[in-house]
Amino acid sequence: MIPEYSVVNMQGQRVLMFRLVVGKYQEIETSVLVLGVTIALLEATINRWVESTNTTAASWFMVQILQ
Image (tube, rainbow, N blue to C red; front, side):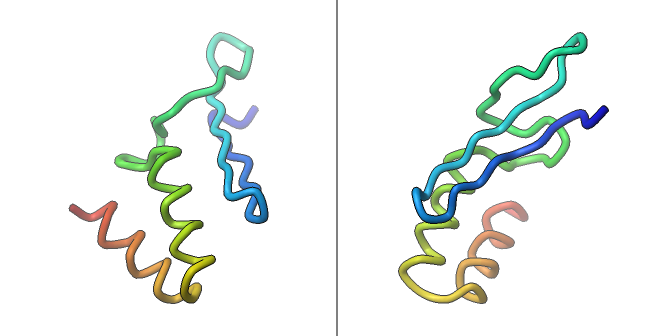
C-alpha cells in the first residue's frame, strides 16, 4: 500500500493530499513523509509555475522547503 499520495490538478491549480491511516486514506493538509510540504505550498508553487517558468517555480519551491 502507498502510505501517502497527492493529486495535482495543474489547470485548476488545486492539490489534494491523502495519507493511509489504519487501512483507509484520509485527506491531509501537510505531508508526513516530506517535511515542510503542505497543500498551500504546492498550490503556491503551481501559481508561480503558471505565472513564470517551470525552472523559476522549482527553484522557489526548493528554497521554501529548505528554510
